Image (cartoon, rainbow, N blue to C red):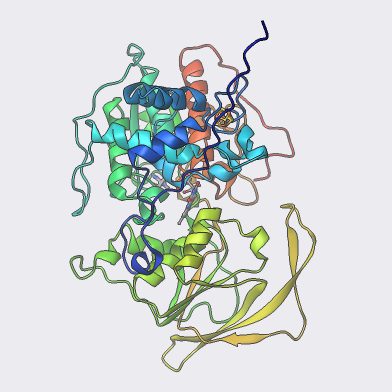
Length: 498
Ligand code: FAD
Ligand code: SF4
């Protein structure tokens, strides 16, 4: 008898996630993307083919077993899905919201070859939010922040008796701390600011990543046993040597790249010019968006120009719109194709009425008699040969200068590591860009006992790459602390350029 034909897979289109309407959300700070309702999650999970050799896992820097957690969703087993997801990812509610999935796991999903990839991030968010609703519920953080103790304790190795320090509580530090705690070490996180989370709380706005979600995931890391010390600047409050003298046997540096860069053009000192970091910190961390309930207003003009094309620029532009600006412009020196922001966020910004000036570069900022911004001179650009980054180099078109009528300019041009952490920290080599030299495979720096990862090593990058670096370093720190790998790393000569 002829073998029965395998039934054809029902073709289900990728499920869109409900969002606030653009005309409504452009003036409020509530979360834009609303998450999948149950029925859309079920449909989306059914799209996963459960490939025998899944590519999506390799596409994820923390190697989440994506098919495993989606299989549990297909089976209707939410606790199973959460267990599979949290086994590899300590911060899935965050990753589900802000990871650039289109260039990571979703980019290599086999479905992407013929149709749209499985919406891995949206499913991840669904599972993490469900898990939070089951006991990792975020408390009300509106008037500051607090850490609840009501999370269940996950599996951990027996105590090793070793004390380790993690400097910085961004995604790199939190991931490293969580894994070190799971390995059984006594972990202390030292954080310079009065709230944990790094860019996740001071940079990424509430409407993309609610702070209650970040604090709930910080709670989870704390529930693993990690201690958190706030308002402690390493390099000022304590030096790295103080930390070792205090009995810590290993240190992970995850202090990010929070030092803003400027263009060095005339007029950058006028009132009304912000770095995106300062602007976003005032809006998010200092709760400027909650004025007048919070007495921390942020001045925003009538016409705002944001210079840059990354996620930071999109966030600054979208915050400006929500704070009441009449018109918000993005001024970017390359074309739409090279825009480094997450595709979804650039689309959201366009829908909210933000106007994009591509192939445009500022050359001067004009000020009025009182020292306030009154306009910006720009020049048209064209794309030349590719530069070191592989992207085509923007070249100014002679004689194409024109003026933009703006009264606020926000510079979102990229950032470098803040050198503070290196004060009195001998033995740590840095590159000419101010990033710390570290082994890609282990995260070891040029000073024995010190590891580093995240933006402090790579320069401004992504949440998931910082998490991947934190995870890699934690595994190597564990090997070192257990005496399994004590020969220290030395960089190749050309890597270390202090
Ligand atoms: P950070 O998140 O910068 O955390 C470093 C922490 O160390 C901070 O809390 C800081 O206060 C603390 N610290 C610094 N110096 C000291 C010291 N001396 N002592 C003690 N503590 C110290 N990535 C994405 O993947 N998706 C996005 O959508 C996205 N949007 C972004 C939007 C904005 C506005 C910004 C600025 C970045 C965005 N990124 C995004 C990039 C991403 O947030 C970063 O790559 C990531 O946060 C880096 O993590 P990190 O842990 O290395 O550093
Ligand atoms: Fe599912 Fe895509 Fe991963 Fe295959 S590659 S297992 S279809 S998510």
